[in-house]
Length: 99
Image (cartoon, rainbow, N blue to C red):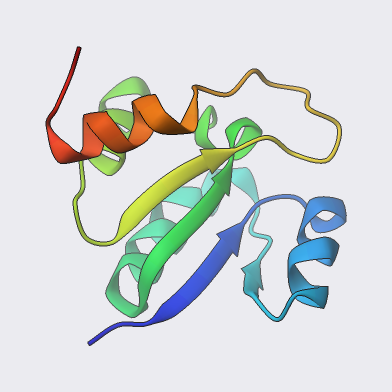
């Protein structure tokens, strides 16, 4: 069973997660789709900054956000440069319980 938590985002935000012992990946935004596909094979929880998630086209964003396993959670970066959907809404959407 997969148990790794993985962070994908910018280097500055990644520093805090690295200090907490989380595996981090800081890819170029153009390679995000390939990196996410690899991460889905080895992690049970993937944290992605909103800025990086916006780099994907809308269809890919929806595909990744609807995945049940691994759960992909979009978080704010250290500068909060891109607004983030409420975590409770993300969880409900992933579980298929939309309001």
